[in-house]
Length: 186
Ligand SMILES: [Zn+2]
Image (cartoon, protein in one colour):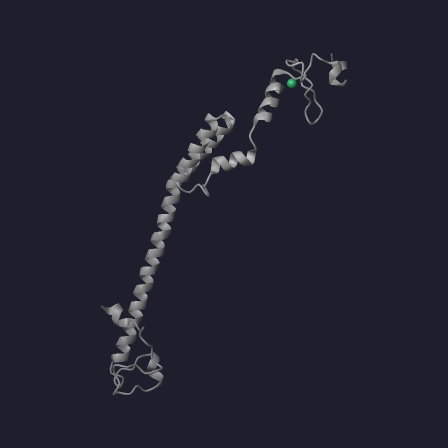
């Protein structure tokens, strides 16, 4: 019946009236006379009619989840997914795909945790190194300020003479220890 395929669907009741976007007609037999569709396209029509709004479904699935960087968030998502699947608001294959992606996310979390721990450790080590350097610099500055200026001038204050009667308070030009040196030393 190839000569009938281009005619309007009303004249061809034996074949499904569904056509693809590029104009190809479905080859299956009509199941439902009222719609003129085959079993497959009747089901497709029904599922499209009853399908929830995608944005509403996404809102239900995501809830308060902002990202998937914790096991708690992924667990919450899986719970929401189960609810939607149980209520038949989501296609089974979509649910399977989302569950699979969730599994991948969960398996990537330990690596993410390790990376964060390493970054935190590096920051802490950096802080310790900085405080050691500051402490050391303050110690050097105090040592050069208290050293006898006549016999052994500090390199920074070498350009100007340091008065001998002021060993404790450093010359304005010489390096100043931090104000909290006393607290650093204790
Ligand atoms: Zn069809």
